[in-house]
Image 1 (cartoon, one colour):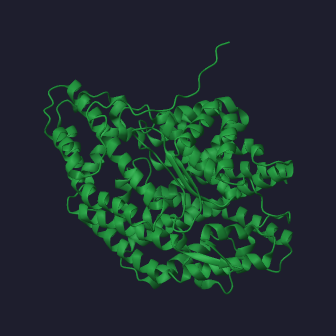
Image 2 (cartoon, one colour; image 1 turned 120 degrees about the horizontal axis):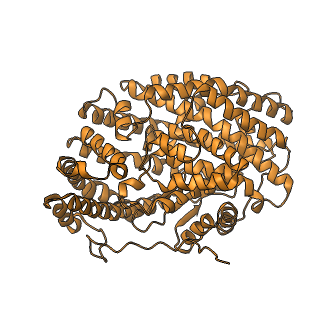
Image 3 (cartoon, helix red, strand yellow; image 1 turned 30 degrees about the vertical axis):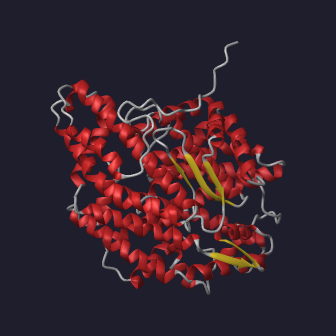
Length: 576
């Protein structure tokens, strides 16, 4: 019997343009290669394509150096050497590279051989290049550098916060585990302690955001846009949907999902037998049992994820094993570590890096399989010769990760020893799938307002958040006495500070993930084959075409949202 070999551990492709032992440490070191590409004469379509491949090699090395600096800096925000290395890239390399990248775009589009390039292969790439040329302004280079540096202040502020819970100091991520405790007094103490420590930084965070808002608005004006919202849609290459489509998404979620969340919360209040449902009651398991513990430490989390992924497809488990062997994980929460989690692609080596703040919860399991979905995407698209073709739009990147949250759930028995625990974990995840959608819509609508009204005061911003929250928050939760915390709860969302407007993608992708999971339950082999096909295309097709390749629709109409919500509700009822 022929046995198909598993994926081979990726290795850097033999370099053609840069020396094999080249490592980026300074601008002076890499500048000659930028100049060489800029000045090269191109006399045929074949020479243009060779030039593009050389550029892609340069971009891969450049971006991988940037990646490692970011990974080290977020892993230890108090380390001055890591901060210095990251800041050097942001202030001394990126500003000098930016004009060259713009010149490369001009050179490509102006070449008489550009039209001779394979249209099927290069259409999406060239579409993006033309848009980058359209919005590029040299006077924005120092502003974008300043934005990069200022936005990192958010991670430093939040990463430095610690709380004391019953005499023990811990990070916010570690303390959040107590929100699942069956001890309601402990939950409230923890909630108020975390809230109090966050509120100590509200003025610093508002001041930081005021600065970012001013800088971003100026970037938009310099580029000829009326506002930063419209500039960002162009900068993100949002060719396949508009701000009006985002508004339709908001309306669909408010109409079809918010009432379902209210019903979930009403049942939660009854099950807990409390006079009023408070914010610290939202994480505790309704069975009255202690919080689930799907793994003991990061080593076990990786091992169980490998097994889980192998059940979905043997290659998927192998990808995680390769990452583990190469040390491409930083999983556990610790003081001084930046909040959140991410999968950072490595465009040259092809093996990404996963970063998160694990404390042993079900939410950490979900984060791991989510980032694992991104990792699978990195592996499957690494074969593409053009580096920018691996830089997929977020609506597709998040489809890869959020689909894996749901598909992997069919194999979570590797994390839970009893059917009862598995049932609890699945119910929690399915409810959170729907529960996440109103928050995503709220954050997105708030950001539209922010950047369409750049002259706002802190007070106006606070009132706008409260008004938008009323549209998307469940009326079953009692926030009395916590009004101040609600007004600043947007401070919890790092995307607002670090990557503005990068959030609606989670909503679009969540709908797509539900549809893909539905397909998986009907025909696992076909669904995974379509998933692999879509991910292997990278960004060589439109978003709609990539969703179609995955066997689903890029659709957020009220009717489609209702259809998917009903499917999730039916799956929940099967376990109740």
